[in-house]
Length: 184
Image (cartoon, rainbow, N blue to C red; front, side, top):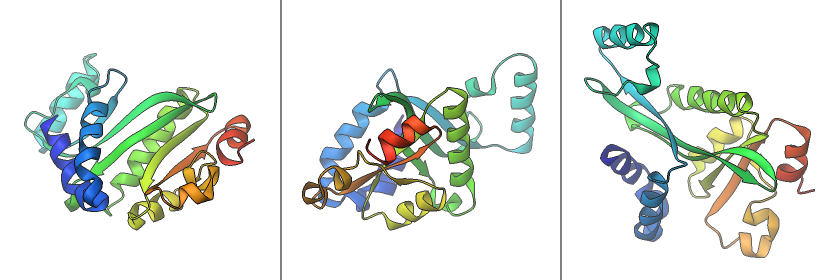
């Protein structure tokens, strides 16, 4: 938990600016909610990877293997929720160490998240991005994410202009597209 808090602070404090102290409190509460799910990204030495696969082959899921002996490189925090009567996988955080950013790991993780969403029969993946985080906005746009009809800028442009974030989505079915992209 400490690693997640520290990486989140390192990556997001500048983006949030003066809002960070209050946002940090909110994020700490979100982190420990019972419905929170995580994917931890670990870098292992070759011998540790072999142990991980052996454990998986012996019936223990790799998801239960801790990063002991490995170096944490990042995480995805997500939840299964309902937005506009549509079941969605909501990505709360995708955070990577700066040393591994821009190398395809974020794209891979979002593809994994989309696969989890589809296999779980979710209608979409949704997430929130700070408007000032132009790199993240471009990253998600390149992956096919669009501003959701539930984003403040789409609900009421006069209010949305004063909000520091956008809600993005990528839909997988027509009902989700109608409700989350088109606002119908």
